[in-house]
Length: 469
Image 1 (cartoon, rainbow, N blue to C red):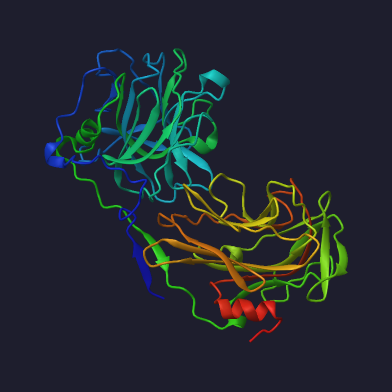
Image 2 (tube, rainbow, N blue to C red):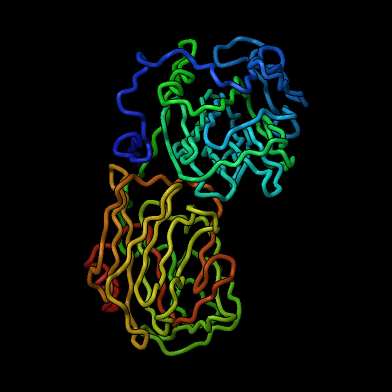
């Protein structure tokens, strides 16, 4: 099947390159207010003049981005790091970090990993900053003071990337290769004693040891301009390698029967999948078998009852339909999950269907945004309602979301920005619960189905009427 590349630079509002700044206009790299400079030219001496030299533990000299030998350091991802203690004195209203990194192949993990540079020993006020990875995405971890800025592009491996962060007393800005990718308002409280670590987290957690090469670490007590950041990224004539776009697969073309991924008639508490996929349900508690709209149904008590299914076939990222019959829910609950697919990590729960004070919500998460669609009218909890939600990712990367009630289109939206979800192989589907069995919800569920493409309104109407063609 032919893939359609989505160039995320086009129409991506988070990609915020400073207007009017060109490579030709970029000035020479700034050295004023430079408080740490580790060029790694054969050693880890601080060439800023501040005397904050690094102590090398295990890291070995390596070629830099220009191919010069012994001009960077390589880290094995196991126990290599460089320690700067005591650290340079930082300021809460003027800060810039600049560093070069090259990640080894197959180095990214599912969760947080690969700390490039940190000032974070895991203890309260000593947690200042952490430039690391969330999956394959470079992330500026600001220690719970706000949403972490991140780069919603695959950074790539075996290529050098320039990463930079600035803070002006109000806004954190994260750059890659001289281009602003994300920004978040949050404070930046420094700590005068916490050491700076290159290639690991200060607490020494195994997952955070960096695997690859690092070069030219610079820290300023100044908020460098976008022009100055670009100058650092183009220093000595460097031209960054191209960044890969995201790919949107062509939508499946199949019959209604062939598009079916899972089908739970909910006839008994075993919750057997009759789609032919053979998905096994793990049912907790004792959901009560009751009369449903399509035969039998299950009543989840909101206390002990919930269910979970784990299978890679449920990783329906770009095209999807969810259908079910629902009744008996709590109209006062602000957020009750009907179906939820994910792992609980922020912004990485691909799809979910919920009830929010009687309204149906359908949410799609990508790496930076939660795209939620909500019906306007409230459902009657005493009556069975047939609910269907569809997702279709367009050729330009924008997502078309729709919710149907009793076979009729209730609400739809097209997202403002392209879908930027990155497949990370780790999900589970839960029923009447969020995540691992907490926040369980009371509801009656009947005839739950998942399809690997957006069904047409005619197909949804046929399911509502009990006609499968």
